Length: 197
Image (cartoon, rainbow, N blue to C red; front, side, top):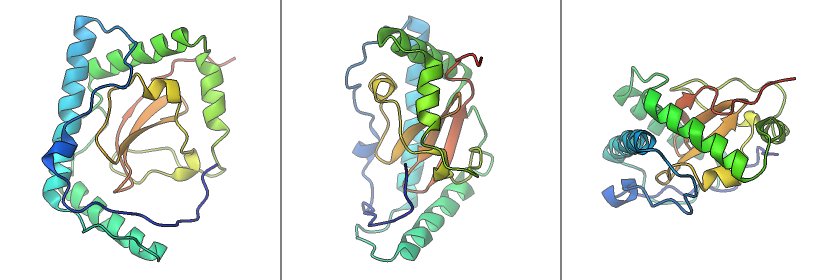
């Protein structure tokens, strides 16, 4: 369960362009069709474009915050600057139709390879949720009461992300979050298509 105690947050100063170059997948056991591979390449290009835009904003110099209020001020400043540069951000900007289909294939293949029922995966993730959590919305803060844990086997198969951009699963949806800015970048509906009983 995610607690609300904030110990420290280190912000890297001036993220280099190299940090926006996406790393190679750790394992990548899922075999992609040519169409899925092209869609993932498009997804990677959109993620890199976002990362370069954030890098151009300029980041605070690296430091450790002892007061959680200072962390929130820095996050809000960065979040506001990102929103100013992406005022029309909406669902599907990064998870395009092609990328959505490819990622759904990856999710299904990962579940099959691990002998998992997606409904059980969803149940495990829901156990991390606290009452009163708000559903995620693009260009809004992520409500950490939704949970912070992510399915490890799937992380090994999904396209790698740059520093401070992460995936989370909320219900059936895959959410892309900028952790540094605490901002939802995009949401892929029905990434886990587990039928409810």
